[in-house]
Structures are given as C-alpha cells and as structure tokens.
Image 1 (cartoon, rainbow, N blue to C red):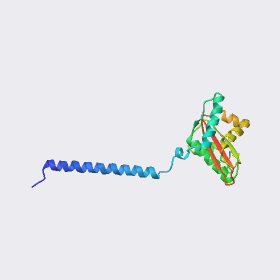
Image 2: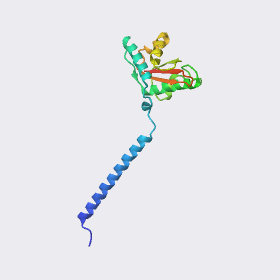
Image 3: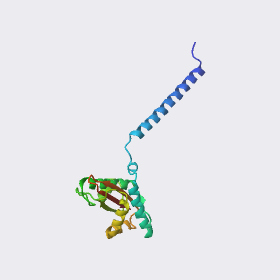
Image 4: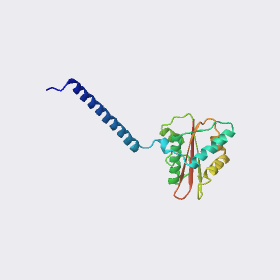
Length: 179
C-alpha cells in the first residue's frame, strides 16, 4: 500500500526542519571557532596600560587648559606607537626615525591610516619602576619647545601612546598624533 500524501509531506517538513537545525548548529560552531582562532584586531591589541592612559589624560588636560579640544584615542596609533617603542627598546636607540630610515609618517601610512598631518614625540627614562613614568614623560616633553608645540597643536585630533621596557630597564615612550 502506498504512503499517504499527508505522511509524505510531514516527513518532508521534518527533514527540512532537521536540515535547517543542523545548518544553524554548524554556522554557530563555525562562528565560535573563528572567534577563538582569529588574530586579534589592532583595537584588541591596543588595550592601554595604566601609564599609557595616564599620558593621554595628562596631555588632554594640558590641551583643555590651553583651550584646545582633547585628542581622541586611536587604537591603531597606539599599536604603531607601541611597536616603535619596542623597536627602540630592543635595538637601543632613541630617535623618531629608526636605524632603517623609517619615520613616523611611513609607519602610520604603512598601517593603512590616512592623515592630513602626523607628528610624534618620544621619551626614554631610566627608572627602577614605572610608577611615575607617565608624569615624568609628560613633564619632560613640556620642557621641550618642540614637544610642547606638538602636544598643544590644534592640527592634531587623535593620538596613540605606546610604552616598552628594554632588557636593561629603560622605559621607551612614543606618542603618535594625526589629523
């Protein structure tokens, strides 16, 4: 005896719902796998340390005192600044231009960031701990007319800060600015 039409439809609907459920479970499993294995984005990598955050806060406080708008934090610039600080720490130099001849504009452009203006300030401190590093770095930057002009320039709208420590214990600080 042939299977009734109603039974065949029910079986087809059940098969379709089962297939849909399996597809949904596979999609969720794929998404979870990709989230766990995907490389971190620049924003995730750029989680600011307390010292880096304090530097940005101190510079923005000085900008507010001068009647300027605060710089917005750029995670991508923080990654670039931190990379330059690590390069200086590992290779033992203090310069905005690396020994390979790469300067701030090339680093920013190389990361795919477009800008109208770019600036960078750097600092090195030889302290046993980093407790007051942020305050000392910003104070020393304000003692330099060039650094002060960069921090208080109205042509910059975003900044990123990066700190690294060398094997010998020196702290290297880089702050990058763009508009």
